[in-house]
Structure formats: C-alpha cells, structure tokens
Image 1 (cartoon, rainbow, N blue to C red):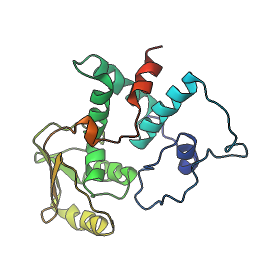
Image 2: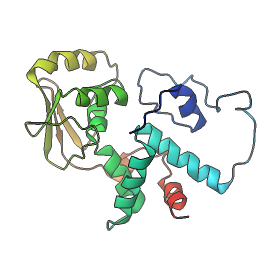
Image 3: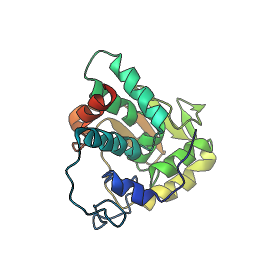
Image 4: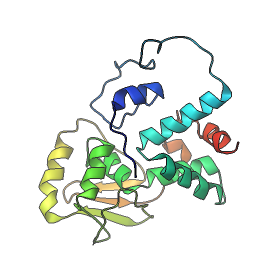
Length: 200
C-alpha cells in the first residue's frame, strides 16, 4: 500500500481536517488552505465540496484511497444508511479504537503499536491495524507491552469517555461493546457528500 510521506499538516489544512489524529495540536492552527493563495475566497463547485469531504474523512482515519473506496462499496451493499454504516466501519478499526481509548497519542502511533504485534484481540495476536472489531471483542496488550502503552496513556491530558467502549486502565484492556450510533460520531462529517461523490 502506498504511504504519504509529505507534510501532513499542510495536507490536512487543505481538506479541513480538524482532528489531525493528534490531541496535542491546538485550535490556534491556521484553518485556511496551505500555500500562497490558500486564503483566497473562491466558491467551490459541488464536485470540489464532495471531494474535500471525502478526503477529510479519509485523512481523519488515515486510510488509503483504495481502502476508503472498499469501505464505501461494502457499506452500500448493506441494509441501512450507507454513510452511517461507512463511518461505523471506520470507527470499528482496531487502530482507531486504540486511539479512542487513549492507548496512543495519534492514530499513526496506534497503527504502529498494532503493527509491532503488541495487541491481542480475544487473546489472539492481531497485527493488522485495519482489523474490524465486532461487538463483544476484548482488546488487550501483551504483558511485555503494558508498561510502554501505560506510559503513553499517562502522557495524554484528555478525558476519554466513549459510550461504545469499556476501558479498564488498570489491566490495560478495552471491550468493544457495540458500534457507535451516528449521533455519537463526529457531527461535522457530511457523509452524504461522500455518497454523492461515489454515485457519479
């Protein structure tokens, strides 16, 4: 899979990503697009709005173009609201759940923790960050990895309380109770624009 190695903050600014997958970045960061003409006022076309929203959601969860398209295709084949199902799938990724639970400072770090085989799901080693969790799955850490991840957790100055997760910080364990409802996910996402983008 191709990996973007350029300046991430500029890329995120261009597409309006506010999460930036980093809790340490503050709201004082400039919100206009990067570059000499980034602050110019120009009315975007419908296609530009759809593309920007698609890129914003994709970059928030740090998935590739190919992965994101697959998530949309799978969601479109299921019964229910396509946009909501797509976001629920993204929220159910193993790397995202580690990030949400506070076991990593960024989603990139969460992905690295999984890649380096520190994580167990239902007692079995899983080293695939895109692994999709199911209701009732229990995520734990290898005994030799607990102190490292606990040090990361203690460095995060943020109250974390997601209704669809049960986190046992003493034992460094997460239970994925259920997929989140749409109102529990980012209200700024306009997933309908993504559906329009792929429907062309």
